[in-house]
Amino acid sequence: ERVTDRVSIISNLKLESMSGFEKLHEVGDTFSLEGNALTDYCALQDVATKFLEGRKEMVINNNTFNPTTKMIANGLCKQ
Image (tube, rainbow, N blue to C red; front, top):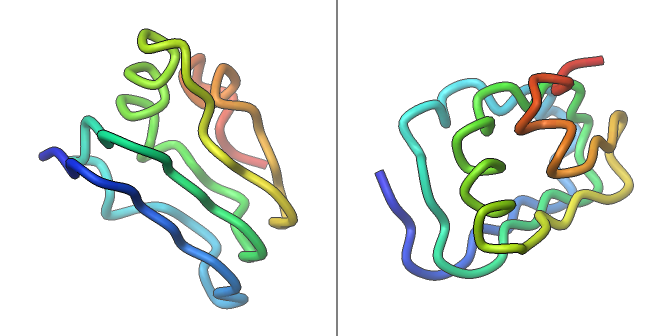
């Protein structure tokens, strides 16, 4: 699956995992995850890889765990 615009998930204190996003392989614009309870980003490995191929970074701030785009792409995606 592909999103042609942006994805923003912000201030969801009950969201701990991105499980369920495994079929998402590409986001055309920005991907922002901010202010959530996230500790597991492993479902986003394909998306992270595509971002790195395009020399872009995902925006990941103020969550319980804040890995870089490269960490997620390399499987270092869960606290």
